[in-house]
Length: 405
Image (cartoon, rainbow, N blue to C red; front, side, top):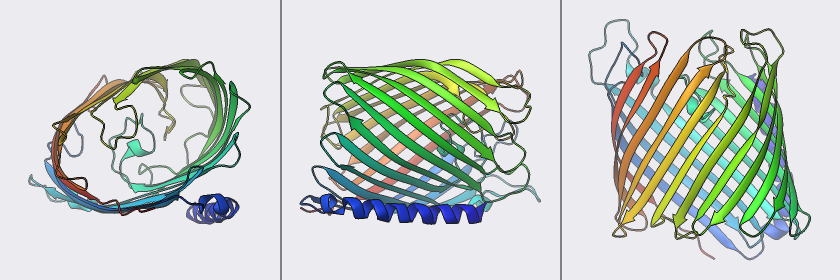
């Protein structure tokens, strides 16, 4: 699996070079250089580091996160690259019995790299390419609806070329291919399972007016697992509507999702009606790095994609985020989510929620200091799956824009 990933990453790099070569005359036209070095440092205390019902352990986390963003943009094209290395060190605050794993066994460096290139090749044609790479222990990075609490380290790579074409003032279409690979560092049984997903997306747009649009989105994908989990094919279709009112954008969608497995699984093939609704807005509506106020609300229902061990569930999820900038210096953010996970292959059903409040003091355009506190809770109808974790975090951030025309 690792050899295959290395070969594919090399192929992706060569494709980057090819597309950059085709678009370089437009990309290197007069524009603006992007160069933003950054560094963050922080401390966090978790009351239940392992998110366990019976083995609650308080752990301190120390981190330092240097990063860099660089690129170039013009009126028609953009090339950018963002990279950060987050050094995470864990320190037990409770006595650990002999033979038990200590928190510092999970020390590691989390890597994040994102490459993006797009160009308005013609008045009607937009070509794009992006690639997201991460080395992480957070299962939610691979699937936002994940209900897991493990800390298995894995590498993920998300590669997406895309083409969008607008036929005129009213109609347009998009084609997108996505390859998504997950490779766990430890290949032992129960320590995560490698997978490879290939997804095609076709979207047809109808622009009813400058404020209202509709689209038909069809996706089909296959996910192949490296071990015992059954491979599957998914087909999903959604009809979406979007409408802008002053500072707000309202979006709603409804459709159907069918998933067929190559092997016999306890749930059998699954299918369901899927839906989503969201509203977002900020003031001022665009252009401000830190808006005066912003909000985001979203609710929807669909299946989770990553089901190692055939553990698939219907995820009904609500997300919320509010922010407000006080006296141009203190940016306060309230964030939360709730997810009901109703499992297909058993009677298990979990309610999991998270809420946090934070405040960042913006000392100047480049430097800030912040504090955040929050609570995460899971209630399950299966034994030993409940947990509650409270956390407190302090961080300092430095981000300097060295870009010049």
